[in-house]
Amino acid sequence: MVRVAVLVSGGGTNLQAIIDAKAAGKIPSAELSLVVASNDKAYALTRAANAGIKGVVVHKEKDEDIAHYGQRLLAVLKENAIDMVVLAGFLTILPENVIQAYDHKMINIHPSLIPSFCGAGFYGLKVHEAALAKGVKVTGATVHFVNEIPDGGDIIAQKAVEVLPDDTPEILQKRVMEQAEWIILPRAVEDVAKNMEV
Ligand code: GAR
Image 1 (cartoon, rainbow, N blue to C red):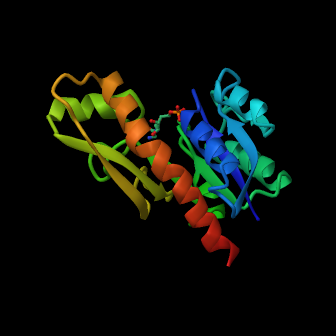
Image 2: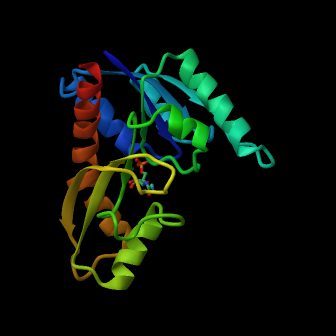
């Protein structure tokens, strides 16, 4: 079975969707082996603990060289024999050494239909603020492989979500999570893991 690490920075609702899908038998090809948080306040760590998944914090220090941070993160992934990495609301930009080590074995969930509202500076609520400011009538979520270009890797799955007239960024964020992210991310974890097994 493919050993998966989920990297998180915040609430961890996407992590929860993966945990729930695993418990429901929908991710037979992967084992949820590790949760790595970028900060010790991430509620995702509590979700990991509740599910019996090992959780660790790997924080990029303020003046730390990015490649050095990458080496520390890689060491943790290696110690835990991690085959595949899932970025689920992970807000630290990853260095090249980490991205190269998991080429086509690292996926990310982004809360828009890439190539709209993506790239540097587009994360979390900012994405939905930008979508509403533009006046788009349809948005959604994308799962993609991670490469050196922010949100630029090969697309694995997308799902569209309607924008409604009275939407606030918060309301739209919740709809995109419920109708797209929490559905396509667990599916993509299984699809990629299954492909890696063969
Ligand atoms: C999710 O909406 C995810 O798509 C987004 O952060 C949120 C994390 O929520 N990620 C990005 O914006 C990455 N560019 P969660 O911690 O509840 O899963």
